[in-house]
Length: 257
Image (cartoon, rainbow, N blue to C red; front, side, top):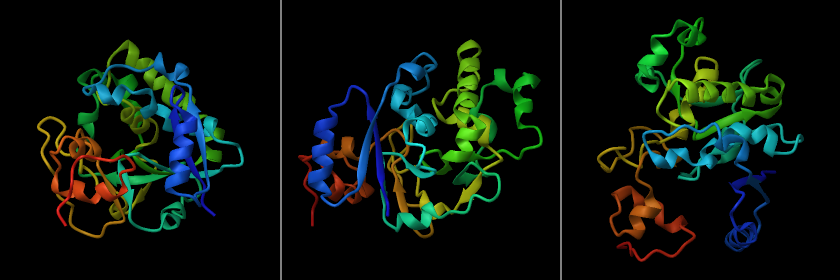
């Protein structure tokens, strides 16, 4: 009763991807949706990491347009994670009467650091958070009500903030800040077991990270370092060994048993 919707670059070899997924997971019910980045490319501003400027990072803002109207709820997952629990539990997250999405939320993080001094010095901008208690949330793991998204035209709201960013740099981190501007303070928090995050390590020094204390339902290699790249380079972090069995491409790195 679960369908996987893979979003890929419009330039990708869809036939090869379809064959790869089918041979690896013969019983998987899935569809592939090429994402034409023409609509979003003109809105993308350079960020502190070039990888964040990839148009596919913005595809999650267009899921309501990409997927058929009969798809009313999705669990959005980044491609740098491993799920080790029943995804049906995450999909069943109650969204209440009004919330559009649920995501792992971190109110202890410095929310102000996600925006520039230009933003915080302009009341017409920062007052968007008036009457809200905004917290950082991770957009790599989200439960989304696509009917509410479509009814609220949230893709347009995100694009409007991206237009402002092109005019007066108000943030530095790619596709995340527009989500925060539109939704922070109005989401349903998801238990942190569904986002053991930061396993990609430090964005600037490339340090390895350990698991956070507590239960684990999802391992997320958010951050600059990706496990497939470190395995291929024979420079893995200890937790990258968890990724290796799921790597669909052969790697020269051999894990000790």
